[in-house]
Structure formats: C-alpha cells, structure tokens
Length: 210
Length: 210
Image (tube, rainbow over all chains, first blue to last red; front, side, top):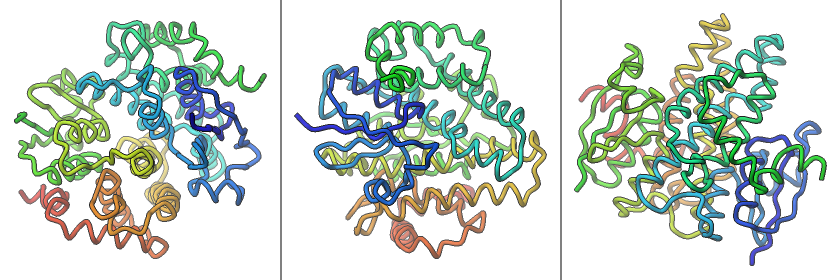
C-alpha cells in the first residue's frame, strides 16, 4: 500500500476533486494544507516538488504527481476499485469529455490567479469579476446539462471522474450566486453525490473544520 | 477499421492537437471544416451532435467524441501503436500532467471566445488583450520548461500526448509575439516535433492550404 500525502487547499476546486476520488477509493491519506491566500504554493520547498506551484499535488511513496485529472487517472490505475474512469471505449470517452468540460472550459477561467488578474491587473470591479465568473460557469453548465445521461450520477449508476469535477464546480457556482434553475439534471446529480460520505468528507467545509 | 471524420477549424489549437495525434497513428480521416469565424459551431446540425458547440469533434463510426484530450485517449486505446500516453504509471502521470498544463492552464484562458469576451464585453483594447494572452502562456511555459525531461520530445524518445499539446501552443505563442528565449527546452522540442511529417501535415498552414 502506497503512502499518500495530498498537498491541497480546502477551497481549491481541483483539490476537492482529488479528495473525492481518494475517498471514493476508500484510501487513507495525509493532508498538508497549502494556503493559497498566504502564497505557500510559491515557497521554495513546494516549488522544488511542483514547479508549477499549484495545488493539488499528490505525493505517492515520495513521487509527486500534479494536475488533478492526471492524479485521478493515476489513482484509478493504482487502485482500480471502484473505477472512476470507465474501461469501455465510449463510456470512457463520454466520462472524460464531461470531466474536461469542467476542468478545461469552466474552472481555469475562474480560479484565484485569474480573478486576481481581473481585479488587480486589469482594474475591473467586483461586479464585473462576478459576472465573468458566472458567465463561464453558465456556458459550461449549459453544455454539461445537455451531456448528462439518465443515471443517478454523471458516471451512471456509480459516481465517476465527471462527478468528482461537477460537485466542486457546483459548490463554486453557489458561492458566486449563479442561478441553477436551468440545470435540473446537474442539481439532482450534485444532490445524489452529496448524500455519499466520500463527497461529504471531501467538502471544503468538512476539511476546514477538520 | 473505423471511419473517422474530424470536425475542426484550421487554426483551433485543440483541433491541431488531434490532427497531430491522428497523423502520429498513421490514420486516414476525413476533415470537415467548422468555421469558428462564421459561427458554424453553433449551427443546429452541429449542436445536435455536440451540445457544447466547440471544435474538435471526432466522429468514429457515427459516434461523436468531443474534448481533444478525451479524443486522444480514445484514439490511444483504439489504435495502440504508437502509444501517445505511456502505460507505465509514473511516465503516464508525467505525460498527462504536462498535457494538462497546456490544456487546462494555458489554452482555455486564450481561446477565441475568451478573447472576444475581453474586447467585446469588457471593452478592453487590443494591447491589453495581447498582454493577457502572453501572460498566461508565459506562466504555463515557465512550468512546462521546468517539467520537460532530457528527451528529444516531451514524450522522451518518441512524441506523445504532451507534444500534441505543446506544438499548437508554441504556434499560438509566436502568433502573439511571446519572446521564447526563456524556454530553450520547449523551443528545441517544438523544432524536433516539426521535423516530423505528422506534425507538419497537421499544421494550420498545411490544413488551410489543403
């Protein structure tokens, strides 16, 4: 059994994804909080392991792995049960596409470094920043709502990699007051996920409290 | 042998990635140009197959697959030789992390819909837009330069999924006049890739001319 240490930040969306995946696999791991507010991700010690200076980073038996979807792929091969990325070709392509709609087309536009750039570098006000935030979530959710199948989860009968991405993004959408009426499937799937302990224990509020 | 139809746009970076992957695999495919300038990706016919309305979309035996990295994953399993995503755990994690630095942390901030939002919706000028563009490429390239190994390609001795992502991003960086002096490894890897016919034939200029 590998020793797993997750370097993350409680509110980081990509970190939340990986915590869900670790919990769904039933894995024990140590958590090292990297405060993005204090800039700890740019410390020399952290950069020595992760040149990008982002969270999350999973250190598995001393080997650092970065990028949340690469970490989940690694976990899914090292600990195959329960599977988070389907093995069958088309279900796999669908699951990865759904995950990438969140991970490529929503989240990167709205993470902390980008919001800081909008306000500090471009001098935009909070209202414009919040509108930017909601705009890209809505565009992505429009697509994801249409792409959601009939299952209880995006992954079908069981939660998978796309659910690991959706739930943190729903949490963010609510923080930025995005109306969710247009996304009944996503709201229902998020609620189904949040009934599971794996998701509850990964939630920023649970991690912060812990 | 599957019938492969790639719906793409010559200058789309994510489309360029998939063309490289198809060529590296030596696969024959038909190309359907979807003009992002003319808004063809939002036509009813296109949206019926791809609710997100983005390029690229690969239709394999009638089944649409979207999101460039999901398409490359599908190709790599359907046509395993040459491999673009390593099978061994740590090389695989590194390759996927490098690919995601481009696909999540650079490209989504700089694609056409975002640049349009900056100028049309936020009323920013061209200079500010170009500075935005270069800022995110530079941040991502700083990380990728440090993450590049000693090999001829990001993939090592053979080009892989990360090279499929790097080369289109280098093309974009040059279009936006980003100085590349700080990235000798990336410049060398890009040059090595562009010696290969698979990359040459996938290039926007080659596709546009064809």
